[in-house]
Picture 1 (cartoon, each protein chain N blue to C red):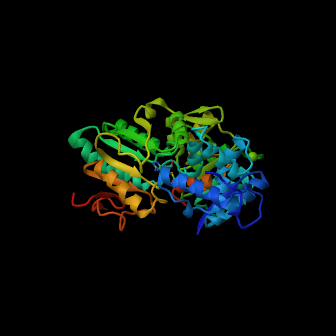
Picture 2: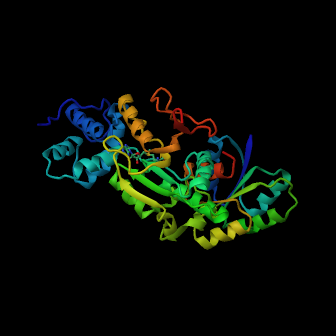
Picture 3: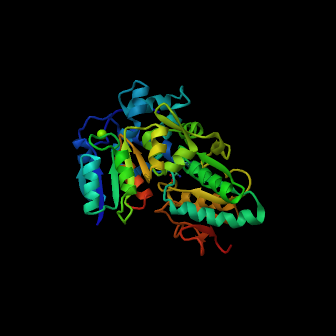
Length: 121
Length: 285
Ligand SMILES: C[S@@+](CC[C@H](N)C(=O)[O-])C[C@H]1O[C@@H](n2cnc3c(N)ncnc32)[C@H](O)[C@@H]1O
Ligand SMILES: [Mg+2]
């Protein structure tokens, strides 16, 4: 089964994303900030990470930089998922190593389409 | 012709515009005469839902009132608006993605031998399909020097064509099928929308064309995409449209249908391509 780590400080977003992902046959884990997400990845790396930008403790961007610098051998796909919808944010995310970018609010079609693009749906 | 409000066509009692059997007959005739599509293949709830915005825009309450306006003939645009609302315009960028690579593969040989190729998108809806082709071929032109094709994109719906020409997509539309790097490369943010760059639009010529009533655009095409357009046509009308598509195809040209569609059992004019899986060529070509 494909695995996805949903990283978002909003409980509602995590719940919505989990629901959609489970209907797309993903096994889902959750983390509330970048720090928790990094621990989860070190424990076992998921196929894909759905990543919020603004979070307490460690932001999505800090997490992404730490992840790409880490020695986690499998390279999980990273799909940013954020309300930061400006071109400068998108560019920064891609340059930091994100594979795809979802502009919130998202729906099922958007998420499914982006997961397809990274080769996972 | 008078239209009486009797015999509701909706068996359930949920709040929706009332629709008599007479009105339903008028609407289905209008749709079939204009587009070849058979309303019988729609469910009646779809009719209600599809026409609700038009009713609201015209300050009408029921489908019967709409039909009265249609038949009274004073407003020549109302038939177009009804047809626009009833045809399914669902589309997305790079729909059935692998097909795009096959088209590129099929056309690159032709381009090498003969130069600029021509593609016809028949039933282009709001423009995502021709724009996807334009992006893909513009990128290939940059990397390999291949001359990008001329794209003729047609649809029966004036409303869809207006949107296609504006090439402006909201956040949900832009994220369906379009990889983020392509969005960054080919679209510019404007307020909450994303607008395609002029370079892409220069590759595409949009025009209105009704596939069941008119012949194809002038000239021959190296590829014709007619995807998810013929679904609701009667077998006879479908065969007629296939004949028109066949007449517009250059020797060795490719026909591309939607993922769930086939020519098998529909026409003898096309057969599956032996080299490009899922695409079709003229029989015996
Ligand atoms: C479901 S969309 C498909 C769009 C695109 N080809 C795709 O596959 O994503 C079907 C389109 O066909 C158009 N269409 C339906 N009947 C037509 C006809 N008789 N002539 C031309 N276009 C027609 C509709 O207006 C609509 O935009
Ligand atoms: Mg947040």
